[in-house]
Length: 294
Image 1 (tube, one colour):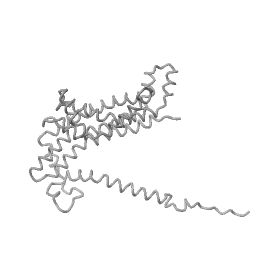
Image 2 (tube, rainbow, N blue to C red):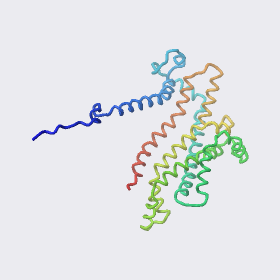
Image 3 (cartoon, rainbow, N blue to C red):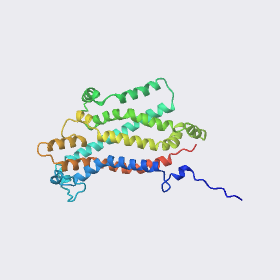
């Protein structure tokens, strides 16, 4: 019998240690992009622990050789940070809950029901997203002032909800449309009412969409600056972005203490990091639990 030679494919021959060169190149590119993206955050946190004298040196300090907590102590010395933190938490919580509630009901109606003006309503939402926020400041200010909600948490939260809802509707619409309506119909055949079928079958499968929308709403409300600058006019009613702006302006009257500025920026970012650490596990578990087998 004649032995038949085994031919190695060209694809396998070009592998390096079982990995294709293209995969290695794209992995290196991804690592470089991640480092470039994360470096400003690292530099902010690193500078928060470096004394101001070392920050003003021409030689950059990539690691705090003599770390100090004095920058954080100076940032919260007047106590206004905790007041601004409470206002930001209150405004953000109201905005997230309100926007998710309204957007969820709107997305459910658009995806599950057919009615006149449905397409026009979606186009209006898209058009609203295209409008710059600055173009609405005068109208928003007059509306909030006429309602007696100027310089209040409720007034600012209402504007945030109106600002967040359009895009959130588009997000949740995709999640709702991705769940087959036949699941609810099958549950209704088994004896459940329409409401019961929705709450017991469809609603648990929407957990990933609700969490993703809540993340978007949280980021928009927490980091928003311009609307808060217009509607919150007193020094006692300031969100954290406004507090940080005032902190930098106060520092500008003398030699800027960049260590305290970076410490204040780090304090503003900490609640966002904590929120993502809490939501990340729930988002992943929700994606797995909400998988639908075809």
